[in-house]
Amino acid sequence: MKLVPQDNETLRNKLDPFDLENSPVDLKELKESLVEKMFEENGIGLAANQLGYPYRVFVIRGKNKEESVMFVNPEIVNQSEYTVNRQEGCLTGGLEDIYAMVKRPDWVTASWYDENKERQQRTFTEMTARVFQHELDHLDGILFIDHCSKLKLDRAIEKRSKIKRRREKVSHVE
Image (cartoon, rainbow, N blue to C red; front, side):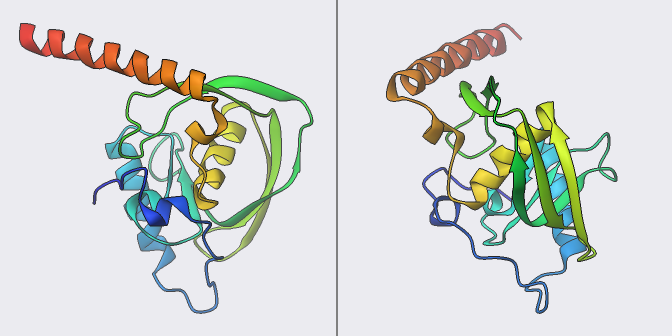
């Protein structure tokens, strides 16, 4: 399984709700695949469409694979008016090593279905709230770079070039 590039159509379109009555895939198997890829890529969240699956589904990393959580048809039902500016990155192809500040609500109350098709609702704070919002954006065809000004994005891309050059120097030494 390979991460799709940032211009992939599945990644750039708002996805329709997952059909819970007539599941196009087994949710438990999909969760296992998403969690496996997320851990393989050392990510903290992964949306199904980042792997080309047109499903309104994502996972967030837990302490281990078993404690990672699947969100099917997630939505925000309430959110903080107070926003926090924090650095974000993304596993999506072409966005590797790009990090930029993104302003998001401090907390969110979310509603979703789990892999057993049971309705869940919880309030998330801090990093979990941020990851939830980032992954939900993916399902709406939005990438974190879409929240950035051109100047901010240009600077982040410039920094990525420096990171790549440093990596190349280190790999030549080994």
